[in-house]
Image (cartoon, rainbow, N blue to C red; front, side, top):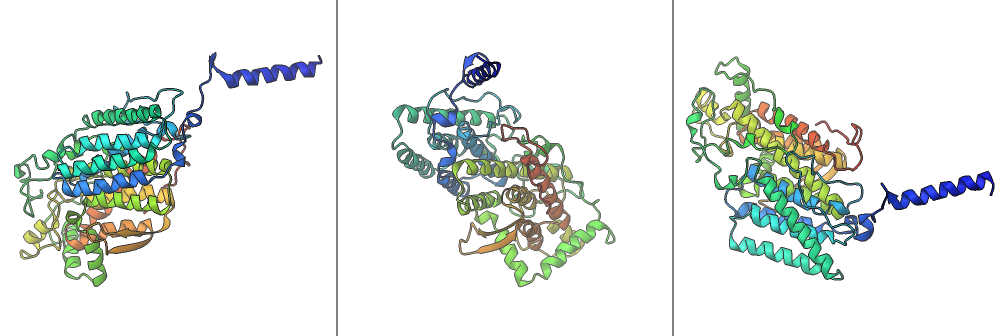
Length: 456
C-alpha cells in the first residue's frame, strides 16, 4: 500500500467514525428525520386559536388590554415550545427567559406530530388562562381541539398521537406554572385593586369616566419577557404647570385645539382606532393583524409560531412598560387639565382608560408590534387592517411608519392623550420591539446584523 493510499484510508476511517459517534457514543438520528418537520404543516391551527382568543377576550370579564396581551404571549410561548424540537435551526427559550428553566423534553428517537402537540398545548393552557369564561366558550375550546385532533391524527400511529398530546399538554402546564410567578397571575379577577386616594397631588390622575379606581396600578411591576424592557421607561413628561407660558400648558392646549377642529379625515382615523371597548382591546386588534398577515403570506407553521411569539411578547412588554411609566409619572389626563385651566365645559371625543396619561399605551403597543412586523416583512409593505368592531371598516397602509403614526395621532384626536404621551410612547415601543428581536431563537449566535432595525 502506498503512502497516499494509507493517508486516504485513515481519512475515510476518521470521517466515518465522527459521523457515527459523538463523544464515543452512537450519534442519535436528527429529530427532523424521525418526525415530519414543522415547516411542512399549515399555520391554520394557530390562526383559528387566535380567532378564538379574540372572542374570549371580548366575552370574558377582566381581560383589559394588559391582561389580554399577557395571555396571548403565554399561549404563543406554549405553542412555540411544543413544536420547536421539530423546527430546524431553532432552539427553546428555556434558560433565556427569567425563571423559565425546567421544561418538558421530547423522548429521544421517537416520532411526534407537531401540530397535534401544538393543539394540545393551546387547549390545555387556554382552559387555565381563560378559566373564568362561560361554559359556552369552554365548549368552543373543546370543539376546536377536537376538530384538529380528528383531522391531524389521520395516518399517524396511536403511540405518536398520544406522545404528541402528552408533550403539548405537559408544555402547557409548564408555561402555566411559569406564568404564575410573573406578578400578573389572576389579574383579570381584580382589575381595580386600589382606591384613588393615592392620587391626590395637584398633577396626579383623577377619574374622568365611570371608574373611580385606576386600572391595574401595579401592572408596571409584572415581569417582562425581556429584562431590558422593564429596566427603563420613557423620559419623564414635561414639568407639570398651569402657567400659560409653560410647555405643559402648550401640550394641553394643542390637544384642546386639535379636538375642536378635526377634519373629516381625522375623524375617520379617530373612529377607526379609538373603539377598543367595542373590540377585543387594542392588543386583540394587533393579534388580528398578525393573523391576517400570516394568512396573507401563506406562512407555514414554523414561521407563524415565531411571528406570534415575537409580536405577543412585544405587546406584553410594551404594556408593562407603559403602565410603569403611567404610574411613575402619575399624570392627569387632558380632560382634567383642560377643565381646570382652559375650558371647564370641554369634553373629549372618547373616554380614556382609567389610568394616568403618560405614556400612551396604544402608541407604545402598536410601535412595538410594528417594529417586529417591519423586521419581518420590510418597512415598505402594503397591508390592510380590518376594524374588529365593524368588519366593514378597513384602512390600507403602504408602510409600517404610517401605521404607527396613525396610532400616535388617533388618541390625540380623541382628546385622551397629550402629544408628548403619544410620541414618546411610540419611541419607547420601538425600543421594546427591538429588544424582542434580540431574543435568540436560532441555535447559532445572533449578531447585530442578524435583524433589520426600523426607525419610525
